[in-house]
Structures are given as C-alpha cells and as structure tokens.
Image 1: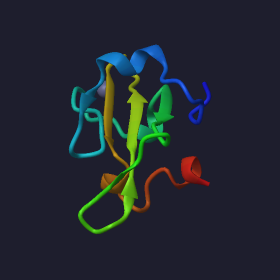
Image 2: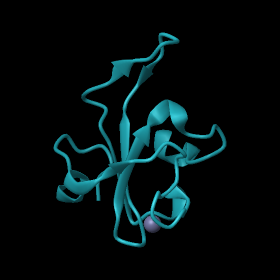
Image 3: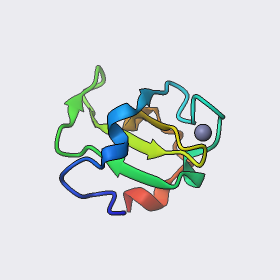
Length: 82
Ligand SMILES: [Zn+2]
C-alpha cells in the first residue's frame, strides 16, 4: 500500500470522519491501521493559515475513517510524515 499514491484506494470511499484521530468504531490508534492514504493533492488552508489535508486510515476492524492532518496528536505517526 502506497500512502502517497495519487489516486485514492477503494477503501477510502466508505470512510467516515473521525474528530478524535482514532477509529470511531473501535477506538484503535491509527498506528495500528492496516493501511493509510494521505490526500496531499487537495490540501486546504485552515483558520491558522496552515495547510492541512485529509488522512485516511483502514482500521484493523475493517472500517475506514479519515481525519484532518492538523488534528493528529504531535507525538503520533511521525514516521508516516518523514
Ligand atoms: Zn476500528
């Protein structure tokens, strides 16, 4: 799975928005997700002027969810960004 591929994986189609940056179905941390995809082609500018984008995760419970990149806790998932 390429988190930076240009076209969204099929599992992102049924994703739901999570405001807490964890799976809204089972609460699992995104570090344990089976797959991730970052929608970096379509960033938006937030209220603070920083760009953000949608991050999609396919959870171990087979539910897909997404959250804004600036909602991610700073200590979480650094490895994906670098
Ligand atoms: Zn889950």
